[in-house]
Amino acid sequence: MENFPKTDRNKVKRLPKRGHYDRETIFSILDAGFLCHVGFVVDGQPFVIPTAYGRDGDAIYLHGSSKSRMLNSLDQGIPVCLTVTHVDGLVLARSAFHHSINYRSAVIFGTAHEVKGEEKERALFLISENILKGRWDEVRGPNEKEMKATSVLRLDIESASAKVRTGPPGDDEEDYALPIWAGVVPLSQVAGAPVADPLLREGIPVAGSVKKLTGQED
Amino acid sequence: MENFPKTDRNKVKRLPKRGHYDRETIFSILDAGFLCHVGFVVDGQPFVIPTAYGRDGDAIYLHGSSKSRMLNSLDQGIPVCLTVTHVDGLVLARSAFHHSINYRSAVIFGTAHEVKGEEKERALFLISENILKGRWDEVRGPNEKEMKATSVLRLDIESASAKVRTGPPGDDEEDYALPIWAGVVPLSQVAGAPVADPLLREGIPVAGSVKKLTGQED
Image (cartoon, each protein chain N blue to C red):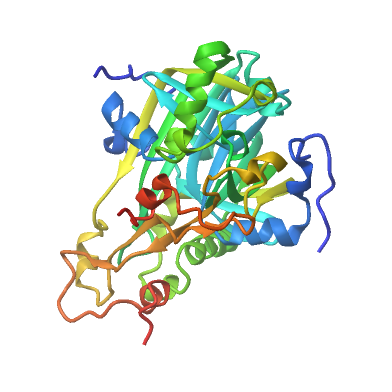
């Protein structure tokens, strides 16, 4: 897959060795998450809002209420920055200065516009699958009224970069002699045991998608 | 503690029942995390960058390289939006439409400026403590050269709001009869077993701060 061209907008300036511009790295970060932070500007004021997303090639889909301030702002064709970050660990060095975080982040630039009809339906499926694979086919699909109440935007990726840090701390040469523990504490997002809706009818088994996610697969 | 006044900037417009403006709720969300997404605008282009933070009252501290594009942009006194989000669970309804996410997010508005001297030192301590309590006292503190290479900004919170969703899905009345599993899958960030630096000298025990975090306290 082709790289995104390095420009002033997406260039990783601090610690450029951690920068990546290839679609494989960027897409793998996007596909490992379901929550992004979307940045946009209204009257000079930036807003950063967390929201779910789905991806299809170079397009990212966002959805929400037709009345959403964010979606209605974005649909004006204004510049958007969409960022996805995974925290993988605390990097604990011997000096305060060299402490760091292991992470993978993707920063996406583009503009968004509303999609309708078949593309809208497919986008909702992709967002749902990105949150919990297999769930879409287990549930009641959206009816006409619900589709009307929902807006879907497509953000075409114009430019993007990723920044990744992995591995142990890097200390100053002379600090390795210090009697200080150093290493990494791995951090990850884990799914706990599913909690049934108190209003769940009796005799309904946990859904297949949930069993898969929580490792309870038969 | 006083509420932040509700204005056009911080008002939660979608699902206003989920909105909170009190310092207690907002600060508890900030204090439960260490990674924020900072949004700012350069030449009309929004940027959203993940970074660590610490809090002291109504002030949020950010740090980074003195050469950081983000810090140098922010120090111009431009408007900033800083968002912290915790994902607490997948909310799985009987209909696709009522699927949701349990989350706590805080959205902070303000402007930042560089701090120096004692306030800078204290800010670095607060950021470090917010990432891993107790670590600061275990390690070699910053020397003069490292302090010079580091910039610290203080963002005074001018306006803020939180948005919180908890609890089971809310389905349409007639959907409760459907034979579809519904409930919540809790999600949380967990710390794994510490991985020692391959260059760690022999005989150095895991640090107290790390034992506390990973539940290995004596």
